[in-house]
Image (cartoon, rainbow, N blue to C red; front, top):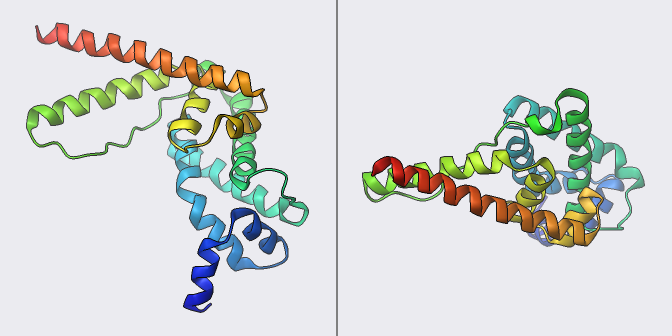
Length: 196
């Protein structure tokens, strides 16, 4: 592939790439995979907290994309379609293996530098509090929150992925943020009280 065609491929839409892949263009799949591999893998890790299981479901998602390629039709954004497959695999796994309320906490990636040991300790404490609070969210709220905050998906896209109405999706996101705010306030107040 020439440098010019690589640049053209990078600006091509996901749906167009998927249609090209369905027509036999392997490089189109490679481009889609490279675009979405990080976000999709993080979605599974943060939902499950188990990297090996996340890897298995991640690979199964791409396997289903490959199987579905010949019949792929542009009826929604590619990311909506991709995360719908991931969502269904996650739900199937949860139903088969774990009770819904026992999903493990996801690993929170620590972003940013701490200038002092005190600010590093505070950032670490806040990250742990956020991780704990997200882990305590009901599964449907956790999923909506992660798809919104981590993946940057719209409420409409999340509602299509989860198979719920737009209003139900907005409620899940709103309640997730409300619950996180309350939980974080409690956790951080407890930390302040311990210091005093």
